[in-house]
Image (cartoon, rainbow, N blue to C red; front, side, top):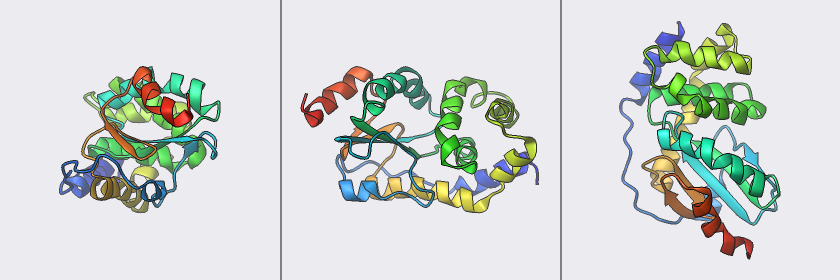
Length: 208
């Protein structure tokens, strides 16, 4: 099976997926802390007072804007200084985003943020092109993906099921219905957040 065949399988498998409307604004911190079958890739200190969980899609323009414009400063000011823990979780809106997350997960935790950062930074060069899989593969060569590895990742049904499980739990348990959706110490915020927005939210949590 080639990579186009693998993407067709993703399309068929996701065709019946529906997104339920959001009902809850805040969620249980204990429930939110439970990682999915692939585990969370956590940035920042385990002792941080603030935990930010973002549900995103790699083909979501607002998600890409957040990761280009806000996330680098958030990381510099708060994650790298031990004040905030950050977790990106998969909420693919389409089969192409599912494929991107599968590829980000395929080489282990150490490659997760380098690959997702690369795909957000170059989203327009693969997500909205005439031949997205070809362009996706070309971009991921920068992350060391050879053709055989690229195709084997997309055919990994266990990996597909695991990524889908994260999205399904977000929909069913946390009522996520759009991307990006952030949970900041369990408080729910839908839509892109600026650095100013985040600082207003986390200042009382940090005691500043």
